[in-house]
Image (tube, rainbow, N blue to C red; front, side):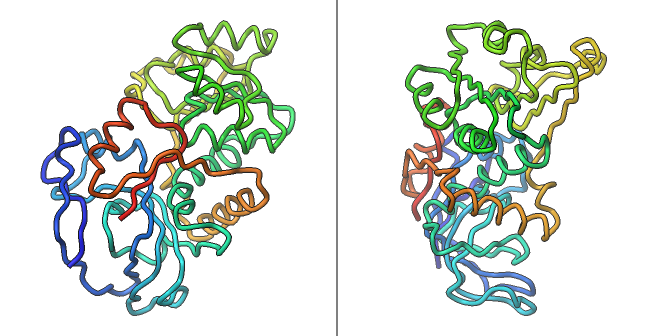
Length: 323
């Protein structure tokens, strides 16, 4: 027997219950892993509330790092004892789990389990946002909403390393200091300032090449007004609620803009893409271009408390669960 967090209904943090479970032997193509650390992400709040449907009972969680303790038939790339990590596979809020081997990557020795658990979903998200959704290059000006969040801090660091000028919006002066330290050249306190006006002033009317928006409803359609003609609006999250439906003609009116709503799962669906993205992320961490900030650690049994902190926006950077 092992322990896992289970949801039998959707609702508040109190629906997250620790239970004894049995994890069977791995089937064909599967691996059993023992977690050493588990990532904590806002997407899990959406699952808990039922905004993202899941078959109940359900174990939330979308990333983790640990060691292989058993392999199923047909698995040739992993063996017992391997250090591994993964993202975008629900079920990580558990001491042990089964997972298809095709979703795992080997965790280099120079990356700890805690860093591995904190970096996979956020780091791979930042990788595709910066390198694939819109390929940021030296000289670009980018706007990052929630710049002190888990993905935001990685975006600030990595974009700066790529030679871009980063403008970050944050909710407090304290968070502004974190984003500035991470690489944001300009900080906007969105609770005190009109971010559209500030972006226009900072860029002297030229505006931004791309806006990375994980906030959603509260920052739309203002984000579109921060873009130069032919600029790209990337909505990758909805912490304040989803963006409402809008007339696509708005993109024409704002300057023939591009708009996209990507998700990590589509970008890592092909094994070769997952390997290439993970390699790029690990290289950025090894080089020091990206430092994964772990600002909170919770015991797995205290996951409800962790969710309350997430929803109240008390967290900055990455938070992890320790089984």
